[in-house]
Length: 132
Image (cartoon, rainbow, N blue to C red; front, side, top):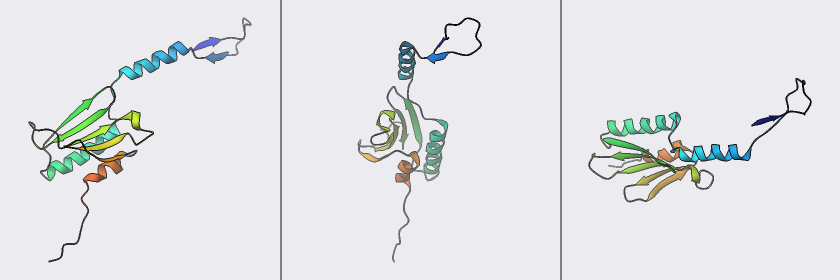
């Protein structure tokens, strides 16, 4: 931003700040070059779920990928296998379908939404009545 004074020398009043379009484009370019990441709150919710599933002996390993257009948290039963589930954050879909998605091993989207907590609820098992 550039300070464009009123033209009068010696005045103490600040002038109007006018942003340069080139500077705004440069900032956008820098942001686009950065990979998408999970923030602390998102990672905390995901790792809390991961800890529960490890304690239940369902998951054993994970991987986090920060790509240019998405961040992916993959969970594995064994390290050498394909991921059982992928929890993805795609900011480009934030206004449309929701930035968060849980994707199954076969590539099917199990749940998609705007709030991570609701998307992760797909892993909560509902209690049901079992009759003997």
